[in-house]
Amino acid sequence: MRGGGEAKPGKSQKSSAQRHLNAGFVVVGLLMLLAYLVAQHFVVGSRHVVITEAQVIMDNVKAPDETENGKVVCNMEGRSDTCEVDGDVRTNGTALSVTLVPASRSERHEWMIRPYSRRFASVRKVTVTQLQDRADAAPCAVTHDVPAVLFAIGGYAGNYWHDYADILVPLFVASRRYNGEVKFLISNIRFQPRWLAKYKAFLQGLSLYDAVDMDGDAQVRCFPHVTVGLRLDKEFSIVPELVPGGRRLSMADFTRFLRETYALPRGSAASRDREQPHKKPRLLLIHRGHYRRITNEPEVARAAEAAGFEAVVAELRGDATEAEQARVVNSFDVVLGVHGAGLTNAVFLPPGGVLIQVVPYGKMEYIARAEFSEPATDMGLKYLDYSVSAEESSLMETLGPEHPAVKDPDSVHRSGWDQVFELYLAKQNVRINVTRFAPTLAQALDHLRQQ
Image (tube, rainbow, N blue to C red; front, side, top):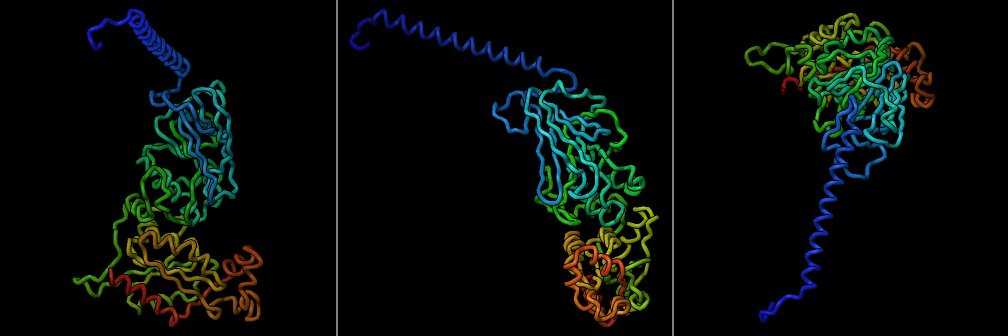
């Protein structure tokens, strides 16, 4: 104090009491926090559940689909329905259910998810549930320490293009981030028993573990994370910005994966070889045994030879293994064929190769290009197409020039997809005018020579 005066006794006693009171509050607060943490340990410390410190110390306000040890995020936009279920996740194959078990009482939510990339495909739905109380959960019979991806091979599986566009490409997108440390849970196997054998090497390239047949699996399995369903963001292709896990994948990555999986030797298409200037790039003309046939295949092959290619006409048999078929196609630089699933084999062409799609008559360019143009470009291929004229179509002969399918294709499109498919895809063959087709072959050769 100024002037050397003494402090008043009453004021000193009041300050001391306040300090003791504050210390008491601190002690009581620490004891309450300790009691809370101990209580939380005993509440969530039951079998099969592991709660980390970071999971316990969370904000009090949580989203409706989030519990103390996990969350469900479902995406119903676009062509597909998918859910990412994270935390204490339990699956039941025979019930086809995926359940998130909360650490403490939560709101119950339920979603019905079709585990196929096209929402309207006819496959059994998965019931995804966020339980209200962990006491309602069935105990784990098998506990896995890796995530899982659950999908179906029903729908349009069995058609070669749909196998890739609907299942294999989306599965690559969903699971590549795990570098093999992921388990596949597959439903509808009984309807496509040969599918798993056909794509065994592909599945093993993505997962180090045996797949689970969900239809015959009565065990309750526990996972730290389950992806339910496959997402299709672009037909037969990948949108890098939408790949989960922060890893930007592309169709070039997908075809590189195929070359690794099937040990394909060629990683680039043929270019002009200074040491072998007369060596010709190879062109594969895909033979179709039923509708949409090229009726003058030998003539088209000779035109390709005259343009500067080594041309081979071959039917890619369905009984060949995927590895055998991949090696055959990889030995070529150009794939040529009429619109159809056979053009899917372009995935095995070396980068820099060429895909030539012959588009059937009937204003089919939009459909044909949607399925192969951008996908081929995304793979690192040169895409070319050749639109068949009315004079090159068998419809001119079978239906006549005055039939609406020949004279007015728009009217057929207005009548619906069934008519479009029947007339332009199921009942049409083509006879290519090789003179008219020659510039397309020249474009393909020029592209390869510039590699």
